[in-house]
Image (cartoon, rainbow, N blue to C red; front, side, top):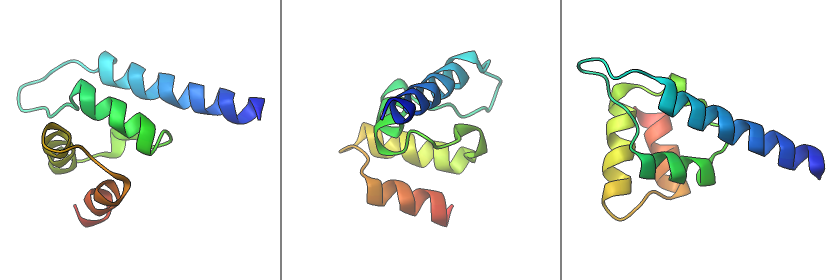
Length: 80
């Protein structure tokens, strides 16, 4: 159980570190802070570095709307 907790914590830290460490370049899409929080909850092992700009935009829009659930995240990751 401790291993799972440590692994989850490490994954969350890496996602948060990536989200804050990336410089904003013109035309770069970045996840909103609310989107990062929801992704941590829905899929803490998601490698956000593999997300396309279209996926990032769709995630941000879903979170800004009525929120993002597991099914919507799966659809975004599989279809785009």
